[in-house]
Image (tube, rainbow, N blue to C red; front, side, top):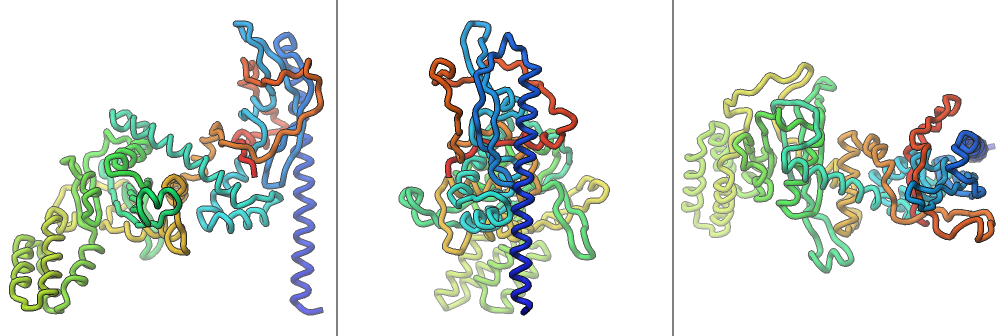
Length: 471
């Protein structure tokens, strides 16, 4: 037998064992859920909750689809209005039929952040006992991204009136901003053209050494969106204020490429703007072909002689007989003239900085080019990718959370987020019309504070269940 044949056989064995384990897990989960439903039934207020029979539902998990039964109850509110409730659903914190577990949701989101929707659906389907289509993966991202967008808007409204909920304290906050052009599709292309700039902002309070010559930004937050300047600045401030206590911030350093929308964040006196070193040096290389002139310009930049620098560039433009060369010098002059306040690096301005917290350093700014690729470019640009405005915004929000290590916590906080459609249709038991009204609602439930039994503590993970969209 060849090694290849042995590998194939082992993969078949591995897949068989995985399927058996998934099947066992689904059985255990079904048993535990139905047992808990029975406990709730036996401990309920029988005068307030009339048993109306059982109904089946489907829960999509990493083990596969778990089909189980739970009891439906009729209850009457204080004003005499009848409604219908599943005590088990209320105890789990879910509100309709056909759910995806929090763990499966997070696996889909993590996969989508790393690859296309089709590839993400394939990898999740292979690694779990669940079959997910690329449309289902897209639906999950759109629904969660919309919920996160609403959170950002609420945070922006609070930040606008200085009522942010952030608790992290720092006296110095670093901000960096840049944009990336992405291709559009469908109605978004008809409205905005072939492409549109997505804005990205990050903020952090310092850097921590992780290796001999390696550092990582600490307490980083990020925000990305296609929207206009005013709305984006408000959204960015909301994201910052949701994490940082902005009342404690004494100084802000802003690094950017000089775009007008970036400098709108530098209107406050506490904000010090710096022209991004990468873009500044690239402009010199791009517009100045003469090596000697290039060296003179860089020396004047380093020596902080900004007025003389602008005069020298203008002199170079007037002394050349080549019209195209003159135009390039004038382009550099215009770029530097528009950003004179940012030509001197912040760390060379002699500003009195507060002492960095223990274990952190204040390093030179200029991390944006790396972050624009890591957060957005690597996933959203190239590979013939095209986006709608809403679809791009929703994915970008998840990417920002992923690369600031806030994705898992945010997904758990969205346990009550209702997705727009269902993945799995509810399978109901046949009951007479007299016993089961057509309309199901949700009335007062005395079991909102029901605790998960200690013997079934693992079910606490199910508190992050989310409804599903139909495949």
